[in-house]
Image 1: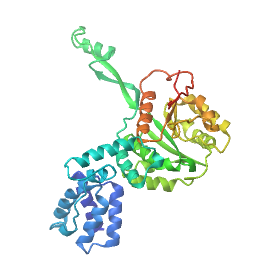
Image 2 (image 1 turned 120 degrees about the horizontal axis):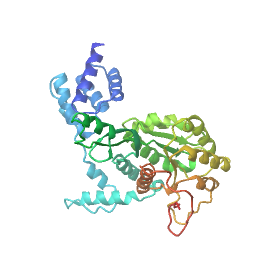
Image 3 (image 1 turned 180 degrees about the horizontal axis):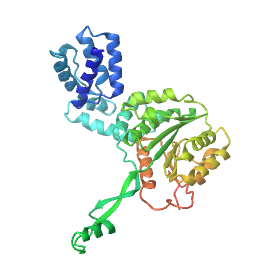
Length: 388
């Protein structure tokens, strides 16, 4: 018991030094030392390094803390130099000619990232998918906000009548200062519904990673569900800090991955159990799906109309919208279009940025619902349905 307490104190010391040693990593560290034992110092060192370090930037701090806590120096022969990220990203660009020029890898990395931003997610190779994961981890989406009921003191804003009168009483009834205040703002809830059926399986991994980034930025105001033959809430696993660990936990929670699609039934389950009770009220709801519906398409239209009555906005991101010659002829899309506030593409990293720009636009401080009627304008190169 004393040994376990000592290991926990060591993890606490690492956390105070600036490392991200959460409860999950500490539990993994204790489990690893349980398998390796505490007799060999090098085994304890590697058990902690593998489980408690989240990146190359933590290695120096870990070595210093280990040497200070357990005495002596860290095993020098076992410390491996971290490979620079820039070189690994540069290798993804086939246009890199040679390493003779000092700045060639930097130009290759920038070029590869720019090209990858516009590539279709379903056409990426394994190396490109790894690069995409790094780019997704760098996204910093700002959650939309809404006015709150509380007010706070401000130099600009409306005249705060009561505080001004109270201040005037202290100066003999003369209002020497006009105090002002304005409403505070709170995060607006965002609900992401991700289709993980067979027709969307090539996009599901990237979409769930994008949902993980959004959830980590605003864990209290973001909800994520998967749609297939059934509805699955994956908000809790996607709140984990490590993206790989979060995706593994989410995949274990989804029993119908790469299966069929019953959008109408899963939306009805979402509204009955979650949305109608408050999850979708006043929220911006984003559906990531290609619209292939094996069930009754009219049921999908009915549930979207029901959702639109109490949601702030309903957005639909379809990966096929960005393709040349696409027409919304699927039964599910035809039933959904009259009830959507925006119909956009969602096939690339750049399109995911535009999807979030739509979330910010519809979830902002505008009064009333954005737009009133839906008008379809499918012209050459059009990629979204405009609001009249």
